[in-house]
Length: 86
Image 1 (cartoon, rainbow, N blue to C red):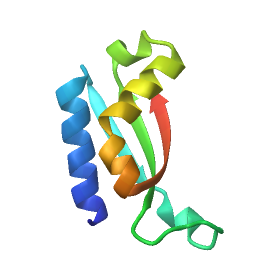
Image 2: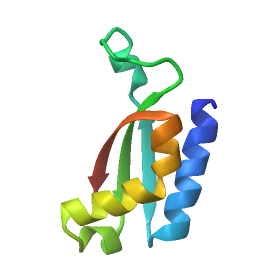
Image 3: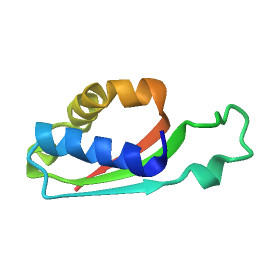
């Protein structure tokens, strides 16, 4: 899967499951190219969500909900996520 397909899937899943005003997804994989444990085809993403619904939850609860929605992508295509909720 390429990064554009992955971003489209992530956005669709998040918009369909939460009340979100805006999503910004940045591919940070280039920052990890030479790190041990870096796996080809798995991406490092920074996801910024603007959502009052998620902002009202504790950080732990909101992160768990997002990770559950993206469980397949995390298993197969994502190495790490930096998640910011505003």
